[in-house]
Length: 363
Image 1 (cartoon, rainbow, N blue to C red):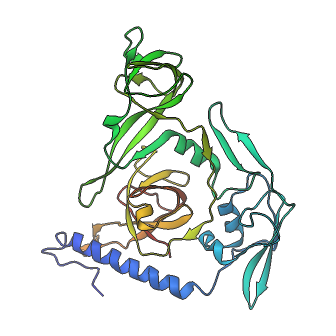
Image 2: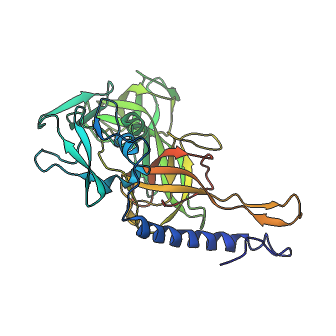
Image 3: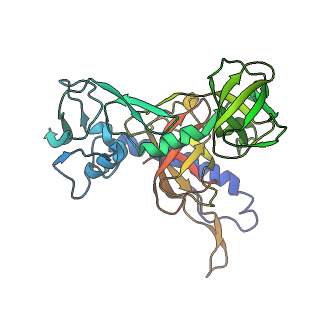
């Protein structure tokens, strides 16, 4: 153990050492806590005994109706082996709370057998293909809008991508329905491309090394005439398109991901690299970028907590320096992973989530 009161002469100098020690102890405590609590699941206050799923439900929302900790959903979920795709839940299905050996579990009663696939139109240019209308883990409009607008490059290979040179009338700023020339591009008439622009490098705050590069989508273009330069027409634009903007093949179908919320069990500590929101602090519903991904074992559905280091303050009575405790600032669920980067959605926020917060295993 260590004292939370720092020596006067070098208290601030030891801040970084104590920060590392506190987070190391925190990770150890979380691992012990997870092992101790694994045997018992705490139900939510006023939880239902029998719940019928309705349109608009999310798995996180349903888990929160039954559990105080929604990320413990796998511990009470029991698959129905009599139905197809037993992991999926649909509007009209019933979830019945039962007990075995004193432990709660949910029995899944399907409204009907479902085996028909259908395509649901989400926008003029993006389609989501899914099994019937099974409920997602988190609001799909948040995920799909984000995946449509962001792209991660884990190496600086944008120099090899096709790029805009100018409009056919020498314009340097372009918009929807403009025709433009593009170099280093292959395709046939009718081929669709996304137009992207670099947002900047994602940097590891510890060693200052670049982890990846993030690009935003500006619009979509269609090949009119192949060649070098090729002639393309902008069929959709979200922002002005400039000389030097890059192009990548368009994804014609975005698959709606299905996953269950669950606590990430391997010890981990990540940094928040940024967010879509440009506010100083983020709250529930905001998407954040994290400094770890599938290389560290993360996958969609993993739930973690964000922790706020409140820093060193001056005691108003003793006038001496003291350290405030580290507090949970929010809960985040991973929904998209790359090798060294992941995107997470803030599910809950108590004191606001900020870039300097750490992301660790949830208690």
